[in-house]
Length: 328
Image (cartoon, rainbow, N blue to C red; front, side, top):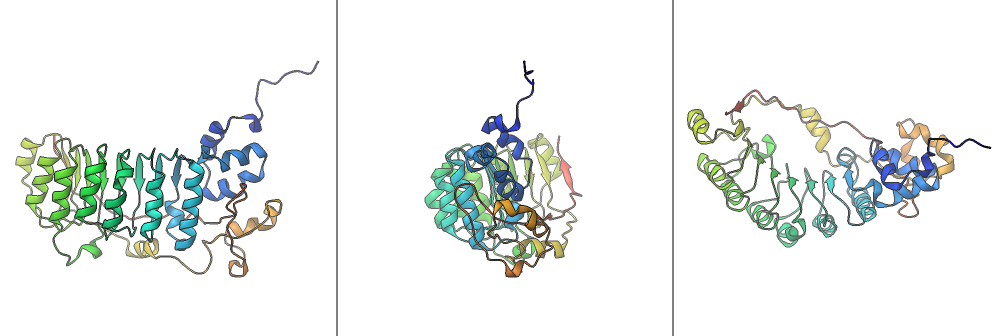
């Protein structure tokens, strides 16, 4: 009699378990390698099991806008309403943001750095983000007080807000006190707030501290007009940690330029059509060894046969927290 094994075959694992395992792989591997292994693995990739948490921020730093939009629509559609976390950089229009909010019924964490959403689209769609607890809108220069008021009005569970600015964007800009006051007036449950390089006054910061009594961390790097008395802060807000405003900040400008450039047309970050059974022939191209310019670029958006390529580059914005005031 044939002995039974105590171990199950990989292709017999339930899709949820496969999704957890595949989450440790790169976007490139999940979309192009895994579907070619077997039917059960392809099913896991095509279904929602791999896309409850979507982090394509590094890939999105380099891809062209229309590729980013198509990638987001494909992956979010696959999540079938189960999306809990989304990290992406550089949304270029309001329509893709609106699409994200249409599928945000389960969304808890949303990170949209360096994106171009307008106040008006956020005002119209903020009601769909009621489950969000963590929101990062850093370096989104078009977002103002109106958008923040709408977020505060509808996102009652919000405990973390990041809306940092880059020092080059903040230089010479008008006061953003209206944005700080919008936060103070509408987000009482905040525990973590980052607003580096905001052109705001001390009074606006005090309004935030009064309007957000649960605040545990406040980042004010580069908010040069803010003057806080350490003794007063220690007595009045003993559990609050403040970073800044006077921090010797360090930015690798070359890295920032690399990270924030819209995209490159050298096709290094583009997708192309290929047959799964020819993967070995294309393997060198994943590592930038081939002549990408001559490839015909397409997207497969059905039947789990996606061939979307994106080199996953490391991106950093470097700063040194030399003035972390721990007020206990």
